[in-house]
Length: 133
Image 1: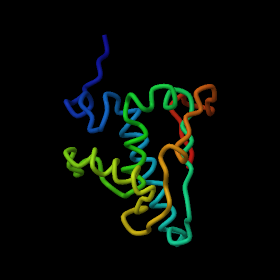
Image 2: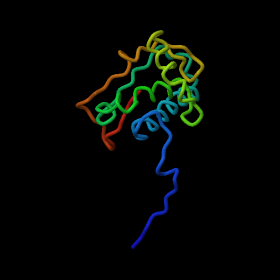
Image 3: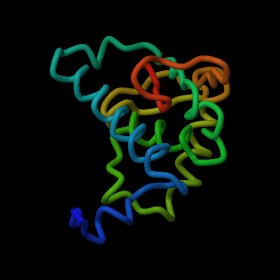
């Protein structure tokens, strides 16, 4: 019988919610998105962002913290080093001010209630957990 060796790091993931595929994945995707904007010198020209969550990410997004993870990733915060005690205050500030500092460098208008859309009935090809920016 074959076996696969795994470590404790494979079993326990860092994230803001109960499912790393619904938090850590979207957080890293948001970081990768802002990083790609910076590499192409486009970050400063961004005036707004719309986040579309599909399928499983839409259906369990709020309950699993996907919306929170995406916002923190867009702000440039790192899931490994971000102090979890600051999550509520940061997310509340974004909602109240309707602004975020994209990648920690460029302020944009952002209203989570308007700019994060949960597309419950739609899926993207290849994986049920998908999002677009």
